[in-house]
Length: 335
Image (cartoon, rainbow, N blue to C red):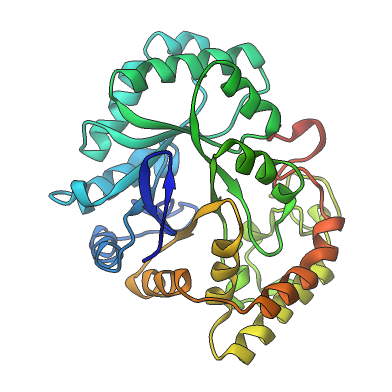
């Protein structure tokens, strides 16, 4: 397994996204048994995948508990990234207790990387959160500071406080390339590794859906799809559904030519991008872990990379340039 560095932390180029871990009936990804979490975690470690990403908000802390259970006795083999929501002013004085609760759910006395999950547009509150978490880093509660969904301006705020950010977790895939305009170049300049979430666009880039109607409503909330047809969508735009599905078909055709599957090609494309340290793949079973691990070492020829870029360039230009996939305009949360 190829690796990259986030600061001085070595991580696999594939990261297991743990949003589904601990899920029950009615959760976003549906129920996931602890036995499956244990098996896929073992498979990941055995294949050289050492990086696991969870969050306080994933299944109300049950994701952290499930990951902690799966890593019992194996914590030394794993790099854990956890994400905390913005703390309100009344909570900031209890920041150590709140972060400590996450550690207890994970069954560890530290995490490797701690991130703010989404920035707030309240600049002063954001600064207070950054400062409170940096104080906890210095206490040893986490090894390195990361951020999630931070744009150029919010990254600059962290830099102005003297905080060394080692990673920015951002939505990035073949049909979601808005970070290429400003944020990815900024991260490259500052030595901040991008950890790309939704590299398979929640299953769309596996080729399993051939028409828009086949895609579950919850997976059609993004700016790619017409918000007027989906009560769960909040972005308000009409989307670019024909262009999106054409890109998926093109991906499947290229994968067939290469004798592999669409997921492998889509993941290999993300991993190939300069500045991307790791692709965060939501995994529910060992087969998905194996596909993701294989993709990390699947070298796409230069002409294929050029074809994939050209095939999705028009969609990139048409979609909003703000990388918040689910809210735009004044409601956008990435800034």
